[in-house]
Image (tube, rainbow, N blue to C red; front, side, top):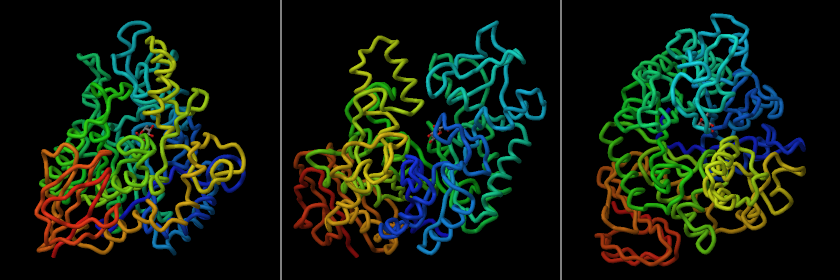
Length: 546
Ligand code: GLC
C-alpha cells in the first residue's frame, strides 16, 4: 500500500467517547463517531493501547498483549469497529509497547516466582553496594531507573515507571514473543503498527552516566537496533504488502532514522522524532520553561525534512500526540487568534514531506486544560514531577504553572463533542476532567461553521489525497533567515507548491517570486500572490504554480 496519500488520526481511546456510562472511553464509543472521522477525510486511525493494563501509565504498562481491557470492550466490539471503519475507507493501527511490560504481566510474575526462563526476559543487575542501584540512570518519570528485588538480591531496570520493567531484547525468546504478538494482531486484520519508544530496546552498556544526566546515551539507538527492527519486519508485519508502521524514536538522530525509515532498509515505514517539540525547553529540560525559540523550531524542521529526504527516508509529521501539550496553546495563540493559528499550524505541517498525524481534538483547536489544582491531574509523570519540583523548593504556584504548560494531561482531557456536561464525552464524571473550553470549542459548534479549523483540515487532507506534489514533491526550504516566517516549497516535475506561515501575532513582510502563483488555500480572505506580501497575524498561504 502506498503511504503517500495517508493521513493518520490518533485516538486516545480512554478520552474519545464513552458509550456505557462509566466515564471511560470505549470501542463502541469510537464506532459511534466513525462518520465524523470519515467526514474529516482521514484514512487511518492509530489507537493508543486498549489491552489489559493496570493503567499506571494508561495502557503503556501492558499486562496482556492479546486481550482488550474490558473497560474498552470485547474482541467482538473490535471486529465490528474494524468492519465499520473499513466501510468508510479507514484502516487501523495498533500501538505495540515492546520496550517494557507491566510488572503485572505474567512473564514478570513468573520471573518473580523464580522461573529462570522468564527472569531472562528482563534486565537484572547486582547493585553497586547494598542498597545502591547498579548505576545512576534516571527513570523518564523521575527517580532512579532500578528497583530492588530482595528475593534475588538484584535490581531490575525500568526506564519508565517502576511498574514498567524493561525487556531484554538480547534474548531471542523475547524477540520471538514480540513478533508473535504482532502476528496475532495481523491475523485479526490489523496491518498498521506504531512501536512505542522502539529505539530504546537495544542497550549499549550499563555504566554510570558520567555527566550525571539520565543515562540516555547508553540506551538510545543502541548497537543492535537496526538488526532487531529488520528481524521484526521479516518475521511479522513485513509479510503484509499493505502494512503501515511508525516507530516512536526518543532523542534520536537523522543518521539512525535514515535506517529506521529508509526506503530500502526493511525496518519501518516512518519515524516520529521529537527535537522540534523541545524548542521551548530551557537547557533541554522539559520541566524548565522558556518561550518557543522560533529559529530553532524552523531549523530543526528543515534539518529533518532535508536530511530525511537526502537519505530517501520518511518522516511522520506532527505537532500533537498524547504526550505533548496542545500545539495551539504552545506554538499558536489559543485566545485572540484561535482560528487563525490553529489553521496556520495545520498548513505548516500538512504540506511538508512525510505522513501527517492529527491528534484527536486538534482539528477543532482543542487547547491545554489549564488545570489549577494538582488533584485534577492523573498522569503518573505529572504527579511524580509535582513532588520532585516541590522537594526542590519551587513554590507550588510555579509548579502548577509548569504543569499547565507541560503536562501530558493537557492532551488527554476528554474529546469535546458539544457544550453539554463533560463536553458530550460521557454523562458521568470522566476519568480525567474536561477542559473548560468545551463550552465553546467543540465539534457541534465546529460543524456549524463553514470556515472552521475542521473545514480547513478537510481541505488539507483532500489536497494530500489529490495532489502528487503534496505526496511526493521534494522539499526546498525558503526564507531561511526570516525571523517570523516558516516557508518552504514542494516541487514535483514542473509543479511548484509554496507554503508560507507567519508564526507571530503581528504583521510581517516577505519577498518571494510569487507573481505567477495562484492561492490554493489560506486562513484570511483576499490574499493576493505578489513578489512582496504582507502576512497578517498567524497568516498561512498555500500557493501553487504549474
Ligand atoms: C511512549 C508513550 C508514552 C509512554 C511511554 C512509555 O513515550 O507515548 O505515553 O508513557 O512511551 O511506554
